[in-house]
Length: 265
Length: 310
Image (cartoon, each protein chain N blue to C red):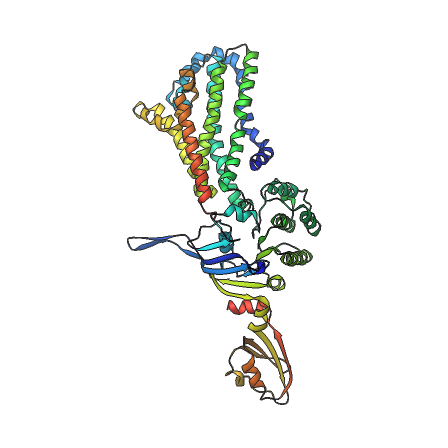
């Protein structure tokens, strides 16, 4: 049982640390600038009211960066969002397309393994590896915040970090679906990029232009934003459900298509 | 039913067309390519079946269809009496496969791959240790550091390690040195004796002639010949060399004789005839002439193959 999962997990755990470590490294860096930044936070707030920054940062830019928690959330979760977009486009599509390019599927699929299960176990490795994000961010934030003598709402931080993990799942499932449909790397990456980055742009544009704010509901990013968590004091249950349903639907479709499509090169 | 007569593979009217064509406003778009058309054959238990054809003839299409990698446009494939699509898990439990363009996971060693796949199709430990002796590839090395020949040997070990009832081999000797090829041929003959059925796709006609019981030749997606190798070689094409006593007749006198594919005059004034199937018309004609020396040889499979592809 879970042979593919365990074997891939063992082989790929080191490489999977790259993204989480890159994000986590920023925590002590922000902590380092925080004492000086604190005195200039009002000027910084004025800059963030600029429409360009609003477009880049969304509503999170309006959050109070005069506090350590506010600054932390802006920096870390904006970076995390970008890493998430990049990783969720590249990694899940590669689960299929790299095997198609290298033709390694020919040997693996000649064994009595249902294709859907083969793919599911590989996707589970991606999703398990993404646990490094909350598992590294939360404790390091705790130590850094303690050393600064500042306040942090760890309930919110945990919710946001695990919310981001669920977003990796939903976006990764969408990417996997694109790869199952196209198989070929160029088209799969293109399709996944258009869908995921399109969703990201949608919420940024909708946040910037009031008359388009109704479009927010059509972007998956709307349901797991750090600023939503901060403003509402947590992630509403319905948001969790939407993310999980989108993720499970895309994943089920990807598995179904991969199981039933032909593997032609 | 006698086990040796049991058909392990039955392929009936297999048709596979790649791509699609559609027309808009009288203009045609897209392109359809015939991968295989109405291909039918069956393979008995314990038989080594050679599958021949040049690049693009449809060999890989047929093999990939048998593995359920491709969807058939029409036709039926039955392996071990099971539907190749519906019962694909059971079929794969009993079948080994070596792809033509072998690719293995770079980050795994040979031992790790054997161990990994052992979970899905358990290896026969006694036979595996025998394979380790025959194929001298270092299984502790990662596959990315292996040469092409060594990777091919590892691929063969993976395909055979479970000692499956049926083995599909696509160009198994590509990259192997001649000694290793001979060892593989010996191993295949031994497996056949033990009841293993082998489907061997190859460009190497010497290999096919030396190990296969029957061959199928595919051309432009259509099966154009299925024949017992020994019978084919002995009856289909023969080379006759004749040296006449006294005056040598002109080459034109042979033009009316049936079944002569070609005739040529050699430096020693003898004639070489390429005869298709029945040699009697020529023998009858020659019996009226004064002959000094006559020799008859079976043509090689290569010559037969080339005749089909002319």
